[in-house]
Length: 125
Image (tube, rainbow, N blue to C red; front, side, top):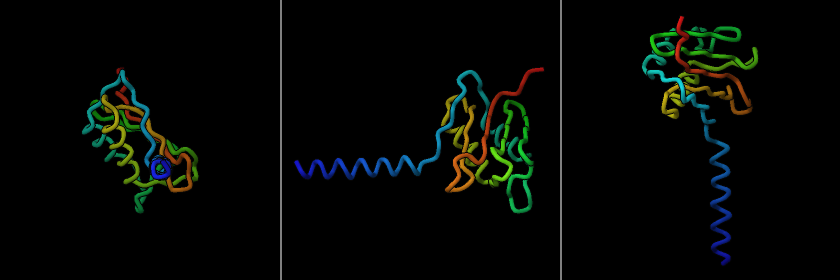
């Protein structure tokens, strides 16, 4: 019995630690379908500084074919990189069956919400 309790305790601690370290899950949009390659193509047009940090003060929106990519800096002091944006796009396109959704990610280990990535269908004019 003591071995079982010890095993249960170790398993519980491991699962709690893993959940704290894992990336946040995207909120998926069931009614919108986008093509992941179109989103990645749009992401190539986003503006970055020479050190690969996001350049716009608060927001940038790019549309290509089936995908509208929106990047929001949660606070003006938050810095994040092109690699972090690309990872967020991959998380949404791989984690959502429609490949569309929204994800808020920390910009560093102590941050609770550095930037937000939204992938949606373009508005029809």
